[in-house]
Length: 293
Image (cartoon, rainbow, N blue to C red; front, side, top):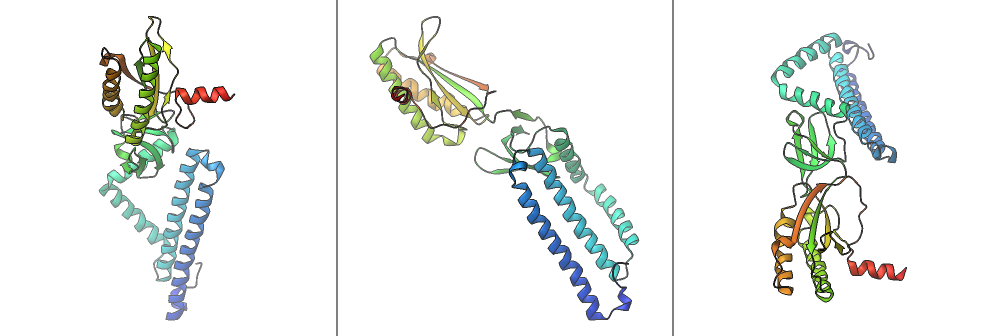
């Protein structure tokens, strides 16, 4: 036995010993949590999402083991043998396992996700019709941060239909036809700049990055157009397809009465190339910048 038997100690000593075991276990757990927090915040682990997840599981298991062992020692001082304690814990664990199969499924699925590299912390995913950035993968829940900034807790056993967005956004292109007349084309471009700025202020929640307006281009058929490139949350492109396009068509029709809705086309695709966040830039801004160079 690690400690003297209860029968060899007076009552105050027994109480002091039990308190010592409990306090020692609690202090050890606090120390482990501090060390774990520091390690999880280290630059090395921040670059390795899977290692962060496994480290979190390791520290959780270690804390459970300390509390479990401390309880066993306390019961031992009250005359309960460790063998009986472990046997009772095993039987109780089996009973709880049969009564809570969902929890067991959560744990097994969580371990499968982590060890199979299905997705990692920091990935943008769509799971069970929920879209967000993976915040953590625990033994029971996968936590997503959705476009509204809310945390979504998904039980691991319900993980299904997983879609992974490699670069963390979808690209939405708005191809806008311009007039062949230079003066009218410049007016249209200025109006597009203004409407795009207003859209960014009105719908910031759908955007993953600031949109970029490209230089005017000409199709092989001779149509002049410019492209507005949006980087958005998956499944959040409806305002671009509806409100943004409608406002563009109405504004450009006032400049050119023959302008029609087909002259503004909206297309979506999953981006494969990461793009750094940059300030909002327009044709005029880029021309000014290039002129300084």
